[in-house]
Length: 283
Image (tube, rainbow, N blue to C red):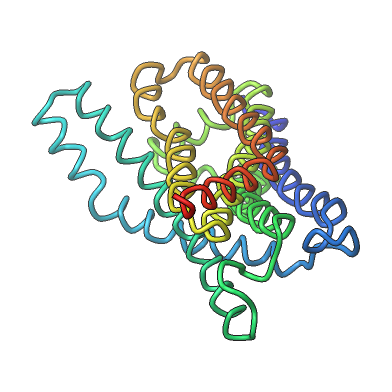
């Protein structure tokens, strides 16, 4: 029996993305001045950077991910193959997503310099950098939620559309739409915490540009890679089990709370980075 309450999952994901943008647009202040709302263009920039990061990931999934896994599986066995796949998936996410944010801030920096600004500054502050991260995560939440929402609405309003599917396709969709309602809550929960991950990683990429410290970019890559790396092992070990969702969402929440702690301490991280730079230059 199809569960109509599951529609709360994708619709909640979209709402979380929109609310994150509205919250930071209202809460954040322009470039540390304490005045004005964050311009909407920074959230749009986050969406553009997310798109730039996701395209090469999709190309890799289409072209090389499956052959690589099969090669690892045959070379080092199932467990070794899953471990290598996890490292690959994690690093792919970390490098492309944090790299896109870093390059985006570098481009802004070069434009600032060409306009008469100083080196080491993209012409924005941490509030705007956080807005870019919010736009990054919100875009992902909206883009992932919207197709599922449209599909569910079509099926629940007109179940006869299922009659044109093959038995295998029908079984998959019925399985997905017969889950308990808490699965929808888990999807919204996940997006809320993942947005925090995106924001903190983006802020670290910004700090790497401002402080001229690639080590901070390395921290961002490692942090975001750690979010995706365990997924292949968890999927293989707990496939079809409710424990998979519980363990996965608990892990996502922990990573999101780490991100929130980092966001709240970005001023300290930035000042520590600046002090480290000064010390190294004196030495």
